[in-house]
Every structure is written in C-alpha cells, then in structure tokens.
Length: 256
Image (cartoon, rainbow, N blue to C red; front, top):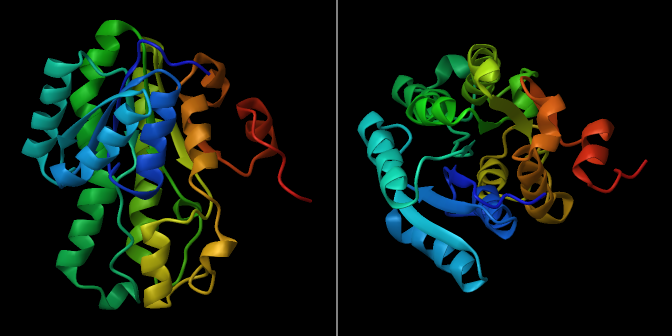
C-alpha cells in the first residue's frame, strides 16, 4: 500500500472526501497537490498533512475553467514533477429537482464540473503519464451513474457520462501503462450529503450523519487503487460495496 515516489493531484480536496483522500495518499508516502477553487481552503488541508509528517502543496484549481486546469497542472509539474496520480473528486449535486424544470445555466455548470472537469484534468496529465509508462486516474463516481434518480437528473447524467469517459480513457491509454478507474464510494458523510438533506430531494435526503460512512474508508480504498495490486480492477467502475474489491483492498467485510 506504499506510494513512495508518486506525485498525486486531488481535485476538490479542501473538505470531505477529497481532503481525506489527500491525507490517505500522503500517509502512504505520495507527495500530494491539494487543489480547490480557493487557495486558502486548500492550504488548510496541505498544512495539516505537513504537520502530520506528510508532503503536500496547495494549488488553486477550478476544474470548470480550462485555463485554471492547465495552470494548476503546470504548477504541480514545476514544483513537484510530473504527476503520476490524478483523483478527480471535485463534484456538485445541484441543480436538484425535476430535470425538465432545471435552469440551463445550472445544468451547464453541473456538466462542466462533474464531467468536463475530469476530462480537462485527464487531458492535462496523460502525456506525462504516457511518457513515464505508468499512471493512475481515478474518477469518483456514484451509484447515480447507473441508476436514474428522480430529482437528481443533472447529477445522474453527468456521472453516467463520467463512467463512459473513464472507460474510453482506459481503452485508449491502458496499453501505455495508465490505469483508469471509476470509483463509487458509497453514501459518505460529506458536504454534498448535507446539501441533499437541506433540499430534501432524493433517496438519501432522510439519512442522518449517523447513517453515513466516514470518508476514511473510501479514502483508504482510493489509496489501494493507486497501487499496482489494484490493476485487475482497472478499466471499469469499482463499487466499495463489492465483496471482492473490499477483500483485495483490505477493507472489513460489510455486515450481513
């Protein structure tokens, strides 16, 4: 499970699952670029990683802005070296409500962040990974990629597109040594779930924080996916609830 020598970029890493993934990768030995739209927010997480003995930098990055993505990856490359791990975690749930009533600008923003953002980030790092002959790209997915959920239409559509995006990148770059995964982390206690509860829309709206998983377990699963041992799962969607995956990743079996 060691990731010594790896250079990782984690998007949307200023809080919740993204921050926990950054900590898990750093704890396994990777040097981590903590990215978020607000530099000050990313710095808090990066400083915490360094205080715990890890190696991290903070980099501003808005995945919905093509120029911001290129500048962020260039900054990582300049300060740390060529990235070998990319975790596309940044995402939004809004707009919530019937899809036919959704504001077009809000729909566009959702697609820009949830689908085109990961595409931009991958485009920016793939040449480095192919030159090195190795690399890992993990797109944080959701059960919404496979299931139509009333009131979550924009999110479902974007995540379904992201699942296919990952499969295409795997088909196009797998032979060059780049492993691509979609990873569904389950229902995790994050800010997004708080937004869903506040809106009262969707199947998880009635859950309380006590019903949700802590981000530490899916973060540990992401760290496993960054190792060569996870190669058999490359090229498709991985669900944290899958017993075979949990066993391979060293996670405890789910209660029966």
